[in-house]
Length: 102
Image: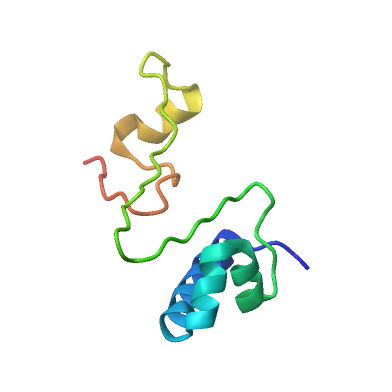
């Protein structure tokens, strides 16, 4: 079986949550073996280095993964400087920036 893409993984997690809410046996299996639960729903394996853990709703905490820190002492590359020169977006922002030079 092939591994999941990021979009597939997001959908798979939503599918697991939906099924776990209505199927108590599946809910127990998802708690015991999250990777197997995803495979049961999608037919695909999670990437080997992807760690997934489901916890029961009662007493659950929220865990948020922070991005890797970047050194604030690093200078921008010439390419990065080109992208922001004149207030233009070089397309690396996914089209979400609206800053334009006058």
